[in-house]
Image (cartoon, rainbow, N blue to C red; front, side, top):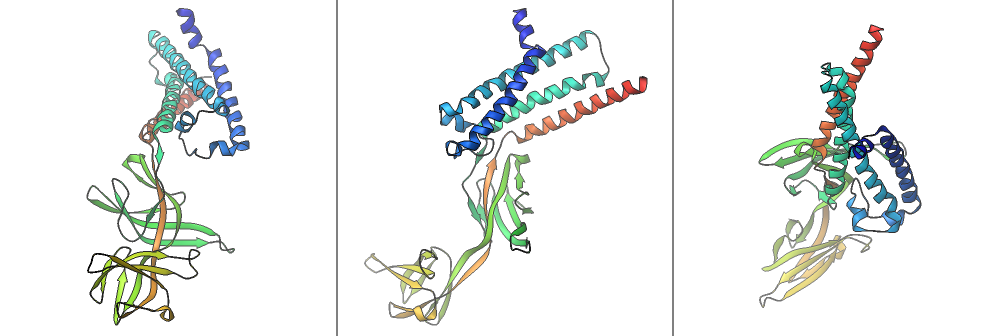
Length: 322
């Protein structure tokens, strides 16, 4: 049993596994680069992809996963053995424990990647505009959108100004391509996918009345309840077209399609109806990334920082003494 323990905590095993992990990462990167069609559903830190799509081409990952487990076990026992020897030797100088703290940080990092890889998720794209949008646990709306461009017209910087409402508390924030909105101590991050103007409503002239209508909004045309059922935009149609659906007295429905413009006016239930205009507002296309390992990653930052400082203090102390 002691031989097994000595082997598990041996420095030689750590070096072999370390080089093996590095080599497998290189091999995996090359395989993914030359066979991208096998990895079309892979995103972010998600490693469940490899378990849900078991293929021989993913063998490098399965070996890597096992190697990382062995690497973590080896580091754990090496660190444990080092701390035990120091405590038995009654070593009380904190800088001498710096390397051990760094090793603990490394073990926690492996756990962080495991949790993030198994439980992180990314939602489908969500459109957010001037009205409150339910994001699942919180709400968001766009209050302003500012962009700057390069001379060739390519976007340089995009800043979306948003309002966030969660648990009855509302606050302002900004979002950009490298500036997500962060919630729940980093567990949730709202990522910007795209931006631009979004349709907020359409303007219909019904007789001498103006209606500013949103999708599925109901209004009356000569006493008949009518709903704005849909809006079709190019290239689906040559020009924007609205679809109106009315409910008749016998509960049957009747629909009409009206292109934009005064010249395309239609007579509907004895009333002239004109699709007059489309109103737009600044909008964002976002996705929500959920990663429960983020708070734990802050622990790794603390451990690595503390361990590095102690190692540096020890090195400086030795240089001064010599």
